[in-house]
Amino acid sequence: IYVDAVPERTAINNTAVYYTVYDGSKWSKPAIIKDDGTLDDAPVLVDLGEKGIMAAWSSADKIFDSNANVIDVLQSRNIETALFNKASNSFGEVKAVTMTTDEDVCGDVQPALSYYSHNGEERLIICYSKNEYSKSGEADEALIGDALNPISVIAYQYYDFENDMWRTTYTEAEKDTIMKSMNWTEGQFADYQKAWYGQGFLNMIPNVSITETLDEYGYWSRNPIIVENKNRISPIVVDSDMITYNGLGIFAYVVDKDANLQTESDRDIYAQIY
Image (tube, rainbow, N blue to C red; front, side, top):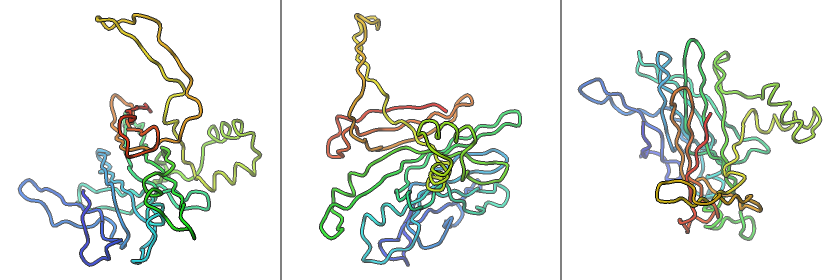
């Protein structure tokens, strides 16, 4: 799968996710997975064995005209998936991972998938970046810096194999944790679930920073210095990827700590394990 232009579309909607299949001697004619006229980006794949191959990508939730504001385009993007049938060499129904709600107006990008199956147990998780943009110009006008410096978080969703869909609700255990941590009523939680429909959110940067001093043999030459990370600027996720290893989903990502994409020396790589 790959992203390419669709010649007959307007410039602002002109990229789509294509796929082509190799039969051992040649590639098939490329086809668009979901030819709905909307802007697509960032496709990824994961093999589900006999079930097929899952594709995920970022897609705008509507077709824009040539006068569209860049921020409106950026924050319109949601994550979608489709399952490729290895027997028919075609994709099935496209399913939404994320959606636009009154609260969730983020641009969802950079999906990454991990699948595990063993002794009848299977798990499928998708991680992605959620970028929230603002318009700082006069009369709600978007400036160049607005597009470059969103508020960024990492979210994730689980696949519900029993109902053959991405989750749209939280489990009872998750509900209990959320309500206790926020001291919410049932009504407040219901509003939260309607707005965020089962999404989980990762802490992108550790709560503490550790500075080590090592000797020539790699041993500590003095006790590490541990400093709590306070008053942190909301960072931006620059890149991410995910693999499955020994039954674990390992998610790695690059964070720009000061949320300034013009500086690169403050970028670090982090990993979290599911």
